[in-house]
Image 1 (cartoon, rainbow, N blue to C red):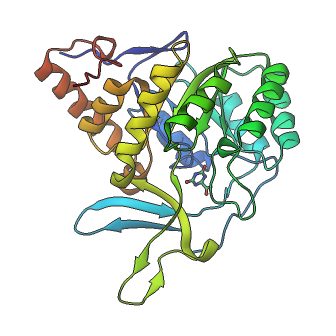
Image 2: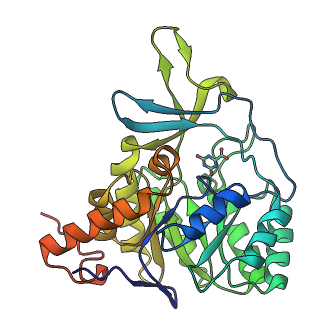
Length: 314
Ligand SMILES: O=C1NC(=O)NC(C(=O)O)N1
């Protein structure tokens, strides 16, 4: 029988499956549902210093023939504001499972202000800095601006002075994998890297009405689900190869034990579920865990360590 327990940084985790920031984690009732779910860890909605309404509706659509195979979203960082998530972090039961807090400040100063407060709160929450929201009109993704990313990592490292992680956008070019990894490797406090956020600024069209599916940004939004699995696996493996001293969290296209297995094989220690969680709800965690466990039993792996990063090439 597969043993799904694992270690993340120096923390014991009962299993490697969790939510992706932004999905089922914006308000306390959702966070409590995640805390009670089978997920081995959980993360809060990426927050800004002040509460935000986000973009106009419709801003999320699941793309489904007979079964959901993807999503497009342009939420625009709607959230209750940093203080709300800090309050949750201070009442979370860390014996039950680790909690990640995701920050996505609209400015570097906002990020540093939130990080100071998080550090002063002395909470066991794990910091994930979102460098990759594609949906705030007029704001580019820090992960695609290497100079800004370098500056942010320097400032956060010196301000936070504790291990933290970053949520990266997908990259699509070897030179970009190399450059991003070279920057990340300058910062030993960047203990983990979460790959990937949605594939930004996709466009989905409704044929019948000849109209975009979502309203914000003329219909341009972040793509998730089946569409992004190959890109997510590539980013997980690219940073796993290039950042041997960092832990990788895989996100993108996970809807069953199969994709969770692939992400771990590519190098992920934990895996995050977004689109499928949005559609199925927190019951998905036990289903994916059972499926992952069955695949491991079938292949003869007792733990995830035995196959993590062991992707073979031809
Ligand atoms: O980082 C993010 N990625 C997304 O795909 N959507 C949300 C958002 O728009 O709030 N943020």
